[in-house]
Length: 202
Image (cartoon, rainbow, N blue to C red):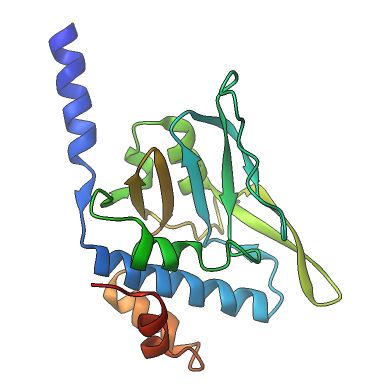
């Protein structure tokens, strides 16, 4: 029984395929651009979001609201909170680009995986079956909630990226090169060179 359990665990972990930091960074650019298109047009449904967890994070997942900061438990008695978020203002507006491009360090691990195959069922369900509902006030993003997607019309991402480093874990959608190019073509004002100059360090 123990041997079987170990084999099952190894099989699940092998479903996480390592990708390069540069590919993760390019996906983070596409992620930011895709969100900008939705918010600039005041659309209410957003399938592009990130999930931020610490080592002891548990469900249920909370949404980080605009202008709020992460509220982690200090004593760890009940486990850390789990947060779904999108760039919702300083200091998180450049969290992914900054972390991937500069701060995560050599110990960071970048992988891609199928959401449905995530070994933690509650994480896999959120990534594959939920979207962000956006609320606006005077044309500005004012609130976000995590809602279950209608199975008929949902456009949830099937593949995601996971970054692990120093007890932190970040999930956000994986975009193929074709998808990245399509997203960036809808956001011509985005200057890729400037983003590399500001965030990327070899």
